[in-house]
Length: 205
Image 1 (cartoon, rainbow, N blue to C red):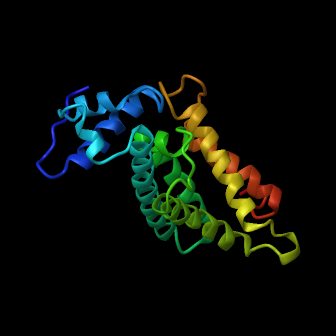
Image 2: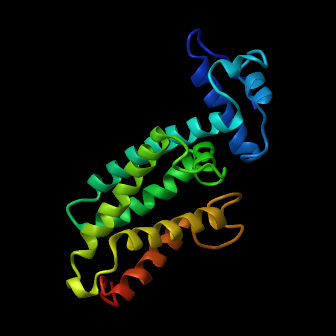
């Protein structure tokens, strides 16, 4: 892991980027503030000018992660139009793409034990990302008669749980080590089974 320097006046972000590398490599409990400082090429005391401690630093990593996540999901949702089904599938693929491209952020967001309500800014960023998932689920569920529609938040939560499980089990480590299928194939077929159960896909779709 290469040491990361910082430009004058941008120490706070340099520490975030250093910690993102550490947390992706060692997990949420596997790094210290001193290690983040060393990675950023500053003194051990320097991080405390910007963060009260490791948890505060992780909260900032998670906040930035949810902002990136929301941006990616919003782009995927628009890119998948005009079909609600295409938009929904695009959002699911974007979830896997984010976890693969931003592992440090993903760990801070979902594996660090940090509450999404730890700060107002974090809660707002988390809510924005979740709202895209809820909107995609809502638009797709409109194809069902009202009496057969699942609660939109539950619909979104089911797909989020499926996506998260695939990331945890199959999108880490050596490709193909746990399954002969790609994470995208697993998610696509899993969502297909779920949507067929709701009556949103024909059996031969």
